[in-house]
Image (cartoon, rainbow, N blue to C red; front, side, top):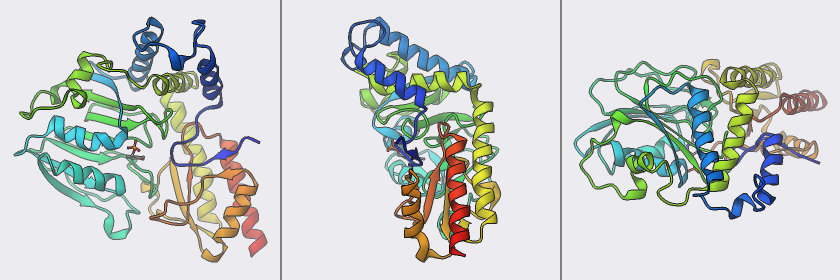
Length: 356
Ligand SMILES: *Cc1c(COP(=O)(O)O)cnc(C)c1O
């Protein structure tokens, strides 16, 4: 039985993407070879990486001046690659701390320049998005758009005179985005786009070439731009599978359609959490709730293990909350069908009735 995959990441991918990917792992594009054994310099892979880049440009309607890069080392490498490429030792970057991932990004950035924590939601276990005013004169403002572990998300981005750098790992391409306030966007693929192993970086060229330090070749955005992400062997298969997901998003109607589907799924789940007395959403403010990672708990914690095992028996997996938060987390990324969310919601309703 195919399980209902609510894991936070690596995460669910669209069924047609997995089917196509497994075919290509055997025989790719009439080459008589698997995609796993072809050269990254082959014309066939050249087409794949160009197509992937083009689809990201198209889906986000990227203006000129923005470059799409495929890097490795996950989003965690961007935590230091960003300040290494953008921030001189005497320059200031503002960071908003909305959880584990922001905290790590801040810690890495401190090695490269002046880092100011502009706001934090640590005082309440990161269960809200703090409000703040963006000062003038900083090099960039760093945000984490969706907080995978806590289930919070910016529904609107703050007005900012300085370029926004944003970790969009867990909500990349989940909704339409006006990219113009953003100087740089990065996203590890394994949440909402493809397999682990590739990270998408979108960078506006005017942010580059302003730091004095030496940047190692493979950590230099300018090299990635110049070499079209092929200075060395890129992660061929993760890029291929990401391209398939991008095709799938386009075929489904693009980002507006994704957002509509995602909102409908999230509404289904949050409505149940707000209605059902046995369950409670972790994020009280409705305007801070994530459409991607829905975190919740039982009002009678002694029933948690019971609920988890009933869910597993129904084929619902991956809903255990992050170890730092506890409770539950249902990750309902782009590829998650509404029917799987409905199954979870029906189980919650039924469970509560039986335990009443
Ligand atoms: C998962 C995650 C990361 C870490 O990603 P890696 O690719 O494992 O380094 C960073 N930021 C966010 C928002 C995440 O969800």
